[in-house]
Length: 448
Ligand code: NDP
Image (tube, rainbow, N blue to C red):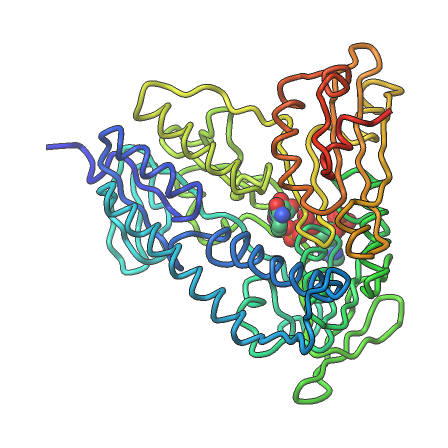
């Protein structure tokens, strides 16, 4: 008789948890996974996937606005919000079904309901059932922060934004990070009047300041009102469809919808971590070592719940490495440097490696190459907006240590260029690469 019900019990069926469960099962482990919401987690159910679909709608709307220049008649252009919402819901359900089928095919036992830790080897479901496992993996992700202000409950978070009854006429967004900027941009393009309120004048803190400044100018040119140096003081209902947002600078904004996008915190409350002596940091994030082990020998944690890099591909890599290491033939270390990321605004911003500021702080003066150009697409569509690319180069070695792009398709272009940056290629290698013409990406090899 095995000592435990399972070899591995995973709490949380998001991207990281599902990957770990399936890989461990493929290695021959007896695996269970518990999930309190829908299978797929933040990325599939209420994040990357539905957001990307909305971003496509927003891009399409703005392209069609300019399409008469190319002879495409977009007369009567109209957004059917409920059709978009239904498509989002359908796609999310399709993916969730695939995730569930994959778990079933991998012979991972799916247990619905919230699970919490009872001891270093035991997990209890909300239904009261207790299961034992040789190892436990916590992959419960993070959850939006709701500011502690009067009327905060009148606002929504990114969890609810995909199922709004109608397109907000006026949207006020709190925050200056990924979620705030993406939704401000998307909803503006779809036709909402949008105001973005950020507590400081620093937006997208981890990104290159010059590139972010250009993005803000572009959003502002498109009609997003930007208020820096203020937060929400109070939200009051003033009508059936109308809210009043009182800001810390004394101003009031009337709107139909308020979006809280002031960050996400690890979802560790009620997880019973203390019962297994699992240490957390001041934000409630589970502290882990380089192999994702918590302060309890038998319990591991991956993804957003560790609050290191809150990105889906990072959680997936961690899940894979955990399963290979504990149930397979070992795993190579994860490279947390040169993690590419993108902000799906219009224009999108994409980056890999060090910003100009980070590089200067680390190496002293660095060499910067930039290209400020009007992409051919914009020239041909008669759109004045310019794109901006920046290469950060180590002055001693000529190695490209940072790449920052603002312009159409920049996330798609950057993923390929990130291979070169991660591979340690030099500016001379970029220069020696023939341009692909006519393209926007050719600017990458033409910077002087
Ligand atoms: P971010 O950490 O990106 O941004 C949070 C923003 O809220 C910051 O501007 C922050 O300001 C501000 N803020 C924090 N606390 C308060 C407060 N008490 N009052 C007012 N403002 C506050 O968080 P998001 O929620 O936008 O996204 C969470 C994470 O999810 C991201 O970090 C990212 O890793 C991931 N994500 C990735 C996406 C992508 O890859 N495209 C898309 C969406 C999310 P300050 O800078 O001053 O702290």
